[in-house]
Length: 465
Ligand code: AMP
Ligand code: ZN
Image (cartoon, rainbow, N blue to C red; front, side):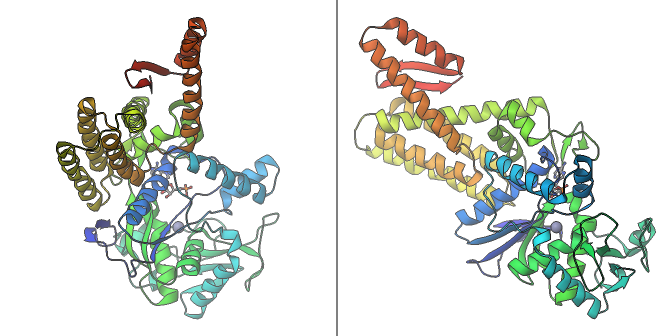
């Protein structure tokens, strides 16, 4: 399996330190609002990377943090007249609601910055001891230029970094390129005790501290959106490597932007849609499908049209799956014929195609194409061969691949499906009793829910309109 490593700017064969304990860290959300579609991109694509590694037999320990203290969380709390903790807790809960809807598996560990203040203080103390950091009036800063290799991830020449750096109001640094590890408490702000007085951690240091605590000094994969490359990830590298004296992450993965009208979707630009709102219009699964329909390193544009296309493609997939499920239950009981077995063996090529695409730096766009090719062939084959055994084998093949991408797997759909099936049974019973008015009423009620019925020799089939 090859991954594009931002550190070396090349696609490299993925060689984890221990295949039974792959260590992966992804920068999680700052929890002061519902997350938007742009934020959803890293959450979804790196969930797929993790699922794919598991599919290929690796055991993965995946850590994704919550930044639950920073200026934005504090400002929101002040606006609403509540504590920072109220805001953080609320939006962590809301994160899990949307993440579940989007089919994002919970990480192995979701640590919070404020629950790791001790680990943060420890690494800051080490950096001071080693001369990489210094205290200044209750703040602590990192001497960026002292770290040999500063700029190695973002490939920025040091002269540019120096020219671009400014000291903001209130900062007490030796050099404009230095960055804050610890910030002295301002009146009325939440704060924690530290050797440098009351204060709170800077953003970059929390990831170094938590990656170290939960995964160790060197991790296999570190991921996040491309906007985090500089300064966030560059600073994480400087902090971790200066403190630990060894490589921080072997592979750095960055997703490209999700744009809207060709501009990055972001809270600060105000051009964002929350996942919650978009899911209300298109459904969570369409958002996931849309996100995976492009390679994670290509920018994608969010539009009504692209979401409607995703929804329609997903519907085709779901209808094909329903058809397979129906025949797997209601088809003939004939054993597989040699010709059918041969046909099924021929379908192996789609699994290979899928794996080749995913092995090539997680090319989900081509992986989805392989699933659709499989579905096309399955649909053709099932129109002449409706046996249970054959349909069940086809279904297992489609499910295997869809599960890696987290497509068509929602439990809510399943409970909805059983509700629909119950109504269909009631309609059948009404027809048996020649109560056609009732049977028609049920058909109309289902139609209003977008469920279309089709009477076939094997029974009633249904699909979504
Ligand atoms: P934040 O909550 O702003 O720290 O962002 C959480 C994650 O979303 C980070 O990995 C960001 O890089 C990523 N992100 C934010 N906006 C976008 C966007 N428009 N497209 C892709 N990724 C984004
Ligand atoms: Zn981070």
